[in-house]
Length: 237
Image (cartoon, rainbow, N blue to C red; front, side, top):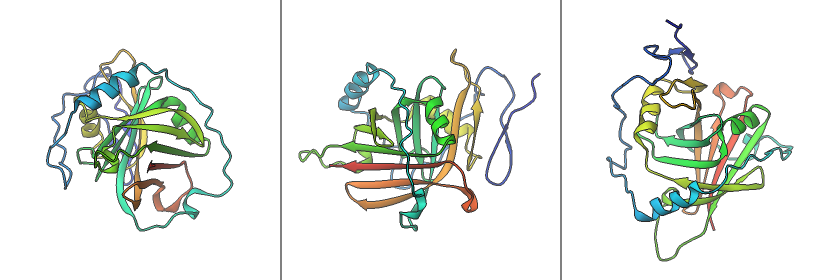
């Protein structure tokens, strides 16, 4: 039997289940519901139509190497709400972003981004990455910012495609359940898919609300240490 894989966390190492090297264990999903949503996931026809269109777009593999002289956290105001953010996906597939109130909660937001998981994590390992997500105002609908269904995506100033919101799938919830004890870290999880292991990176993010039409999530490095820098901007124009 292969030895267990160790997943990094903020305070301790968490050992991934080793019952089978080729599939996620059948762990029951016991995540906490968000404080302002008690299991009310809305799956509308609009979301399904947008997702079907998004699936037809090619995966874009941009350089994402725009130089930035000043450091990420020198320009924003601290004091926002701390959230948990997880980037996960198969290395050659589109990356998913899940935002939770805490590592044990059901995601408040799940976005599918039009950039490969391996490419994004590679760029993060080499420096600062800024993702900007923009959408247009629809005056006939009054949606919360994070409830917008589709976004134009920019990575370090370059347009790279689209991001689409969706409700968390059963597989998403299994990933969150298997990572519920991991506060921050990176690694891989075995899956049933022929695409192999699933790559993930988890960290705390500081959420700063500028207005009803703008929010920013800044990745927080533990104890102020240096490391990958990621910021995600949501803007409705």
